[in-house]
Each structure stands twice: as structure tokens, then as C-alpha cells.
Image (cartoon, rainbow, N blue to C red; front, side, top):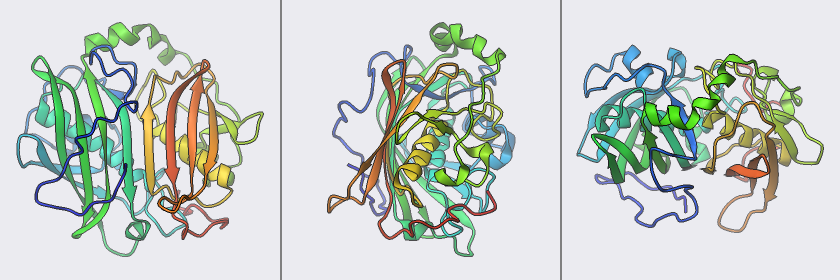
Length: 356
């Protein structure tokens, strides 16, 4: 389902409906999935110009400049765009893995930010609207993520399809994204989003607003190195009562995972929980070069959420991996399959750069 493709003048877009991978494919103004983030910047209508650094932060729903990766956008056709981006060589959260590779979750975060930038800037989505990410997937080549000495200037080719309008704004669409650097493909992937107006989001989630005013108890953390981290501040798993199970640990003060107030667990935090669970379940360095995530429902901040991991053997086509799911109130809320290349050095204690 997820294949690395080479760049072409016209990107191909999957035409097969991913039945079962997208929950609630009905009304976009009443989503049951997981919003990427609902902006608090009001209802200002974005235009094709004016993408200053401050404007970029607004359009990708980030407040801290070091968490913003897109740097510009070019319209190619009505449905195809080119987004320039830059990855840091070190980052407080998306730190180099093992001191050798860029963090593959930079791919997911760049795809997320690119999607919101295109939606606001090119499809007229008001900044105050909420995004729902139903599916996110990517495949990357580990050797092309090796740090090296050159700057990490990235180009993202974006192709949009199955576009459904909601009045003058966007209701939903599918996206295919191709990330490349210096003429070499880094990763390919895609997903599906839907949008709801600020008013619809308020009607759907207004009762959850109180969670923003109440502190969320911070659960104890597992040992950072068991999940590939060097600092307890970045650990999102708490010890569970059974093997390969944990409780989701949410620090709403985390500067990257919770860079702005949110009434639910952000999608990037769930992806990090999946990555940490995969590392803990395999007991070795885990470089998630392939990822398929499905967001099924909101994960609430103030209710326990169980994280479960199941190891997946290599099958001759795909390398070994881990299937992770988040269960809240007895229902699966998020599932994710992650795979790591067999060649990645396992068992090394230094799985994160000390720059983390």
C-alpha cells in the first residue's frame, strides 16, 4: 500500500478508495476523527501572498519558529503545489536518531504542516477552522535520512484529489506527497483530511473546553532509554500492568507536542507514542521508515488511554515492525503500523543524539 516512488513531472495519485481506513466519511462539519489542531487565531481569511515567518507559523498552526518547517509555497496547477521546507540538524524534540539519521517523524510533521499550509493558502480554509486527519502514511529510505554535512533543504510535491467543497471553503480531500532533497527522493506518502468550521467545531467539542482550564495529572514516566529518549520530558508512556502495554502520558506543557492549547491529544503525540511503544516492544533502536496511521476518534486528555504493541515479523516484502493501538473507553481510538529496516543497528544504548 505504501511504496516509495520516484519524482515525475506529474505526480500519480492513488485512485483506489481506502475503505476501512477512514472513519466517518460523512459530513465534514461533524467529524469524529482527530483534528490536527484547531487554530485559536480567529477567522482571518488567508490569501495566496503574505507568507512572512509570522504568517507561516499561523498557517501551519505552530507558535514557535523552531517548530515550523515549510518556508514557501508555489502553485503549479489547481491541484498541484510545490512546498519548500527546511529540517534542522538538531531539534529539541525531533532529534537525530542514534546520531546518524534524521528523525523520520519529521516526515509526518512536515506532511501535516504542508497539508494545512496548502489548505489555508490555496483552498481558502479560514485560519479558525479545525482540521481532521483521518489517515497518514509514509515510506522512506533509511540511507537517505543519514545526516551528512549538507543543509536539509526539502521540496515537497503535493497533489490533491477527491476534493469536496464546503461552501466557499474546503470540506475534505486526499493528498499525495513526495519529499525530495537535491534530486533524491526521501519519502512518499499521503493521507486524507476534512475540515469543519469554527462554529461546527464549537458545537461538536464545546463541552470539552473546560479541559483547557484544568490541569491534567502527569503520570509517571517509563525510563527514557527504554523508549529511545534521553529526557523524561519527552516520554509519552507510563508503565502498564501487562507486557507491551502502557498508559498514555501527556504533559500539556511540552513545547512541541502541546505548542498551543488543545482540548484533545494531538496527532503528533499519538505518533510519538506509537514510536516509543515500538522501541520498547522490540527492545532495540527503532527507526520508523514506514508508517501507516489511522485516527479513529478523539483521544481525550482527561481519561485513561491504553497503548498496546504487537510485534510483526518480516514477511519477505516488508521488514519487521510493530502494530500499535490506543484504546480509550474500551474502543480503539488510533492504530499505527510502524516498520524499521533490518539493517538499522539494534541494541545500541545511544539511540538518541545527546542534542535531544
